[in-house]
Image 1: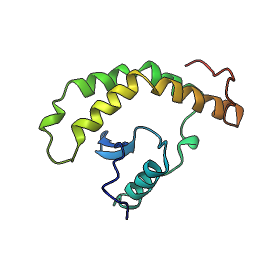
Image 2: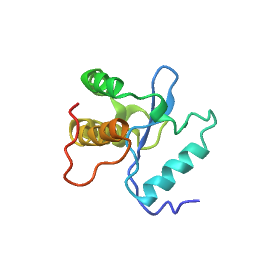
Image 3: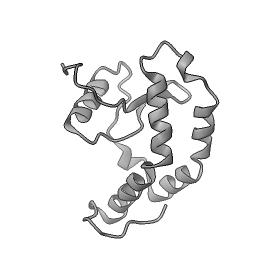
Image 4: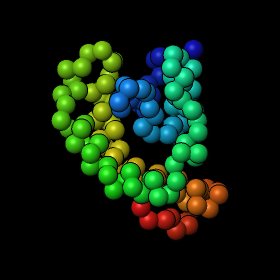
Length: 130
């Protein structure tokens, strides 16, 4: 069990047609990784597949990126502070909105590089466009 005194940003939200959990940002630290593994292990629906590479293609990523406005519209259309059934949901939504605005594009370009090139980019390598 993780030490709950160690703060780590929330990286999981609930949503979609079936209100399933999803990781909206890959973990960046060992603590974040452990929290994501713990979330996956306690998901009663076993929704964490760790199989994104078999579902995402470069074309699908680029299409999702072009359509990301629907996500920001959805997030801004709700008062997340009034949702009390998920702890810290409003903070997680604000973090996700911030990540969509700055940060996600760079991570998606790195992911595109890995999908298209079969390896992670080295520092300074040119990344593909979204």
